[in-house]
Length: 69
Image (cartoon, rainbow, N blue to C red; front, top):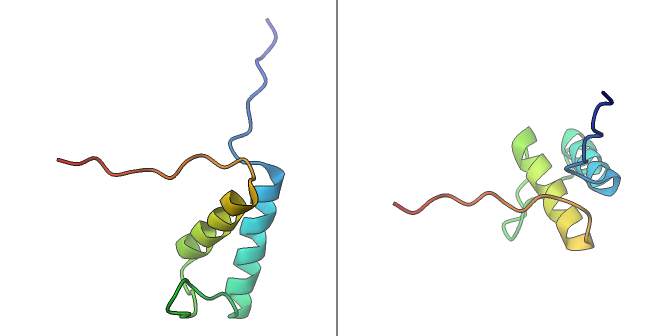
């Protein structure tokens, strides 16, 4: 039986945006939102890259929402 092909969760364009954000973070030029502070964490850099990809219309899953209790 042949294996079923896996579907991509993120597009190549989204991966490029995240890679670019990571490079900027490493160089110390990546800034966040309104405050304009330098980004130091990897997680925040990834989030910024994915956000930019969403704005460009790249294939990226929707943001996870927290459940209300």
